[in-house]
Picture (cartoon, rainbow, N blue to C red):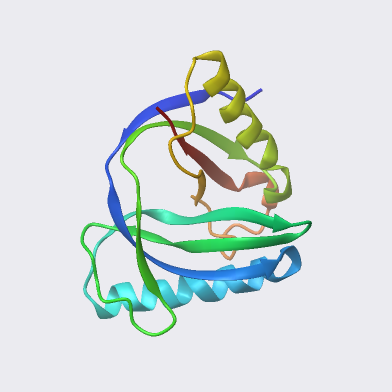
Length: 152
């Protein structure tokens, strides 16, 4: 059902916000986070080098450690409530998910199956890149999310 693309990615510094959240808190926190990040990018006259992204690590049922922000062309001062980070370079399996966010898990599964079938191992935690702004496209069936899984 999903196609897996391989891409060679460049390492990029990031501007992010981190938190431990319940699943119900994610939508409002992400919206606030991207607004904070973009305000700091504009104030710093920085250049974005990608789409807004988020990485999730499950801590317990329904609770996640979340890092969300944007990749940049160069490092900037983080400003209040934000931190710097990075997205790794190297080969990555990329799976495009079109549709509701609550169905994106199948894209992760497709990436993991592809890695196993091709003899690869994850090289870093995967992340999601959001290519659709829910404020401008209210129909969730049209949202585009890319799941990016670095590998060795």
